[in-house]
Image (cartoon, rainbow, N blue to C red; front, side, top):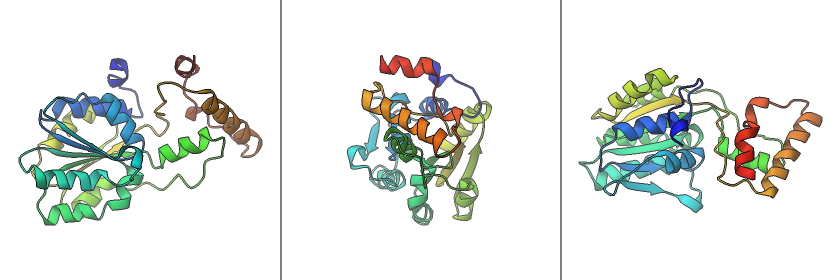
Length: 231
C-alpha cells in the first residue's frame, strides 16, 4: 500500500491524492467520505488518528452524503477542519448545497475525484457480466463552479502539483473545492476476488468483444495484481 501511495504516474492515482491529504490534515480533522470509489480510496489509504472523526454511509449506499456530512461537521465542530471526499458523480447530486456552505460561512474543503464517470456502478455492471451503460458523462469544471458559488476553487491534474495545492486548499478559510482529475481506470480491486466476480468479469470481457466489438484493455488491471487477489 505504501508503494501505491507513492505512485506518481499519470493520470493521477487516487492513492497518491489520499497520501497528500493525510500529510496535511490536522490531527482532529473530520472526514466525510462519499459513496462510490471514494469510499474505497479513503478507507484504505487515509491513516487517521484517535482524535479524527470519520463519517461514512457504508452499506446504506447514500450517494451524495460527502458534502452535507462535511457541512454538518463544520456546524458541530466549528474549530476543526471539515473535509469531504467525493466522486464527481456523487458530488454533482448535491453540488447546489456548496452555495449553502458559502451562504452560511462554513469553511470546508471538498476533494472531488473527477473521472467523468460513475466508476463504482461501472465496476458493478462489469462484475455482473453486463456491458456498462449510463455511467459516463461529460467533463465539468468543479473549480469554476466553486468560484461561481462564492467559494475557492483549485484543479489538480498531475502528481507534481498535488502536495502544494492540497496544502493551500486546506488552509483556506472559505468553502473550497479541489477538482482532482484522477485515473479513470484506477480500479479499487477487492482484497479477495471471488469466483463469481472473476466469472462476471470474464463474461463482461467476452460480451465487450462479441457484442460491443471493443474491449478497452486499459480497464483491465495488470494480471499480476489481479492474480494476487484471486489466488
